[in-house]
Amino acid sequence: MKLRPIAGIVLRQVYLMRGSPVRLFPMVTWVAIDIVLWGFITRYLNTVSGSGMDFVPTLLGGVLLWDFCTRIMQGVSTAFLEDVWSRNFLNLFASPLSIAEYIAGLVITSVVTSSIGLIVMLLLATGVFHLGFFSMGMPLLGFLLLLFVFGIALGIFASAIVLRLGPASEWLLWPLPALLSPFAAVFYPLAVLPHWMQTVSRALPPSYVFEGMRALLAGLPFPAMLLLQGAVVAVAELLLAAYFYGRVYRHAVRTGLLARYSAESVA
Amino acid sequence: MTATAMHVQPDRTALRAAHLCKVYGSLTALDDVSFTVNRGEIVGLLGPNGAGKTTTINMVLGVLAATTGGIEIDGIDLSKQRARALARTNFAAVYASLPGNLTVEENLRFFGLLYGIASLRPRVEELLREFDLTHLRHTKCGVLSSGEQTRAALAKALINRPRLLLLDEPTASLDPSAAQLIRAKIRSLTTGGQCGILWTSHNMNEVEAVCDRVLFLSHGRILLAGNPRTLPQEHGSETLEDLFIRVAREPLAGAADTAS
Image (cartoon, rainbow over all chains, first blue to last red; front, side):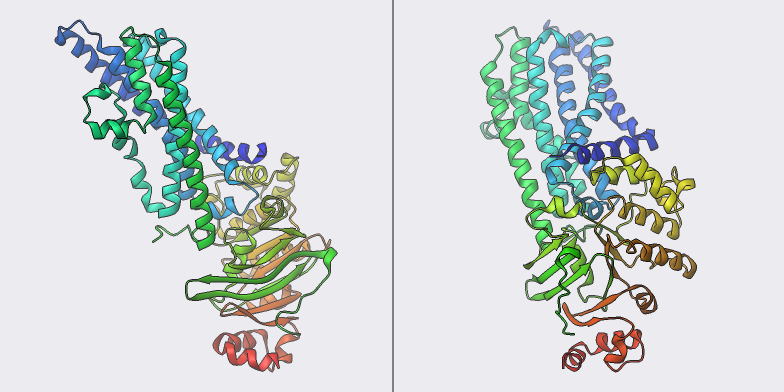
């Protein structure tokens, strides 16, 4: 992989944001709304539950981590969609840019954009709602890393779907995190799910993260094995997503799909 | 000259396409197409709509795989060393405009990085001056006029000083005056003998004025090849346009006539 083409992909996103600062708005707005909304819900639950349980770390912490994962995925797929919207595929893929360099550029872009969202969420959650997020210590880094890897895998997979099915299929992409969230067990223990849902959950690295987070908050020892299992699943899914993208790309080159991608939708 | 005659000059060959075939199910889009483009020459790729011109160009650009056959750009096998081969080529086409939400300068910098240009800033400045785009450097490409967009697309196409330049109807949306300036500009690119150009156009006067050699494609096959200024007379037509119409309407009869 060469650095200049990767820098080109990242620089393009920088230019887009510089040229139209309104693009920064969705990066911070939705996560801020989520934190404020859930912050007040958790405060309310603390006052009415009478159980003495503090809902702030479990619910607000869950929202923060899930939003981070979602933003990572959207960061990759939105950067990809910029090329779909501007019908730029022919210019891109007729250049020496390799698929690995292109994906690396999308990932770096996503790291930057989702980090901005993460900072906003942390500031709000800790400053306004007193979420003691950093009290989890080093495991927090592991949680974030695992969600990052899964978010990237999901973003690459979603981009491959759009590449394969055509520009109109972008509408399949946006509800993907919502579709997965019941299985990710963001707000409840995995044990409350029916058996078949638990089976699906085991294929989703976020479920390992949220189980681990709840264990730590309950004062249990750090579930290192759980996190390791989640990491293995996440890395395997990242490799699968990259393989899938490569296959879709080769199919697009073989069938002429890539060359005629500027059509609104491809049958 | 036979339809598949190869102009073999190994040290000056910018593009060598050998026995290209593209089959989609029962449809043969390209059928055993072979040709070369040498450095310092402009080769016109002509043919009616659906003849296989864009299919050929897409294959050379690496965005469409040939069913069989091979492509070498500046002596480098495209299928084996894609990035190296594509680093020596570039293109401009009316259907592949530059991203409209980036300015002219941003587009040149973006594509300069994709093509791995080392001293990018001076190269961008040089191209902005060369194509009279300096005053438009901060203008988004989406709001440029057709002529300005063509100049910007050509500037992008030259960012890497390509050995092979593919131009798909580069003057299609230009007024006669702007088209003449662009043609002169493109013609000058081959003067130094460093760059070979494959040019598609439906404007036969333009082809006659600009191209050193033409290839007539029809139904995915090269039917005729030769000098655009002498080819019509060699095949019993008064003008290149007459020959084009004859080949387009009666491709197989034309092929039989001319091959003999």
